[in-house]
Length: 208
Length: 71
Image 1: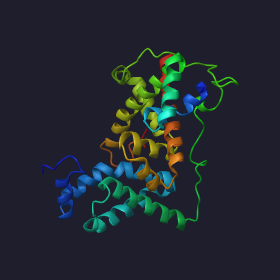
Image 2 (image 1 turned 135 degrees about the horizontal axis):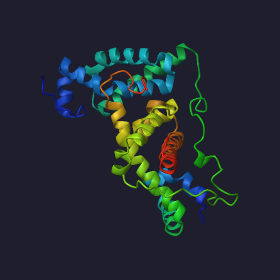
Image 3 (image 1 turned 90 degrees about the horizontal axis):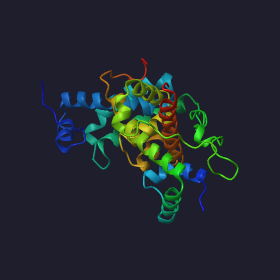
Image 4 (image 1 turned 30 degrees about the vertical axis):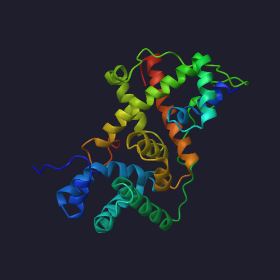
């Protein structure tokens, strides 16, 4: 068992990678493969995502010696996936619009929660489980949230994972997904509201 | 004066600190007075925290293909 620095963004880890350390590369794959699939799906859809990510890994392996550390390693990798996905999309001459991949509006934005003067018609119910720990301890609810994240439309899911889990700057997300700053924010907001609806519903009726 | 609907629209930007000075204060003033919007913002903040923890698990699952696929 080789002891590797866990943080794939650390200088020591990057030095190993640049020196051609295969174990480090393997670790890089373990850490990033899922996220790369999420990004690829947001651009090319389900059918070609695996292929795009495999191509991207080959490109990353080849291009690593040229990695200049101007961006973070994660952003650099995701930019390569994004470029591959866009090339793939051009080859398929298929255009995927934001509307196509964005799914239904969350209830909170659909208007039915507010009256004509913009105040609450159906105000939010208080939550019984009111801390992260209380919510996470409820196994069934945890499963509901897990499923809801998985079922988010591809572009929303991608924005949500890049921003709220990977904490990438909005600017990087715009470049990776080729979506404007305001659209990234709209997608993130919709994803969070959908997850909030799931939690609200569970707190109210005890199921997904 | 901001409407509740406007507060909900901008609530993610608000909790992310992405709003300008005046808009941030307008929302702060609104939620000081409006219990429903205050509750909504608290619930959204909680959702963001919880979803980040669960989302991390989804990305880190040992299955190197997509961990959502087999659901």
